[in-house]
Length: 180
Ligand SMILES: Cc1cc2nc3c(=O)[nH]c(=O)nc-3n(C[C@H](O)[C@H](O)[C@H](O)COP(=O)(O)O)c2cc1C
View (cartoon, helix red, strand yellow):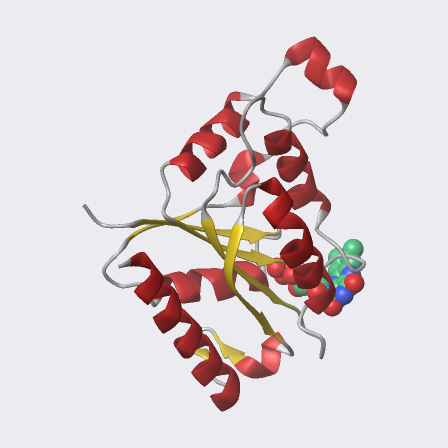
């Protein structure tokens, strides 16, 4: 059976640049069973302990947890909002972290990414995730940030910056070797 890869952007923007990046990276995994997720499909009530006590978990959150359990690799590209996760991503993350007797990432390997229009390429949120996600059951296999998205990425050709393209291809190759 083919390895199952989930790809998700940590953004609810319809024009998300992180979605463009992560979907392009997913396309580099040609011979895998790749599923492109959309955070908008997991728009659930704002997490609160009171809401959880009164109404429990949304079926969408449980479905996402199940998808993660069935995956072999997760590609995530995080949008940076004020140095951290977008509210949409953090909400889903908080909900997933409340499911009893499990963890958000369930021991799965992650390829973590970020991009932004600026020179830091979302490095603050990426660093936060690299430091945090292992406490939520993630194995961070690789990470990558793409600065100046509108100069380094082309809608048709993907990453066009020579150094960054070579970096991502190396990292994808390494991840494929892990999956064998
Ligand atoms: C509320 C808000 C806060 C932002 N804060 C940052 C920031 O701290 N650092 C940064 O590089 N870009 C920041 N940006 C710009 C985002 O990087 C940019 O909107 C990017 O397109 C977000 O990724 P997305 O298109 O995948 O949603 C911010 C944007 C918004 C809307």
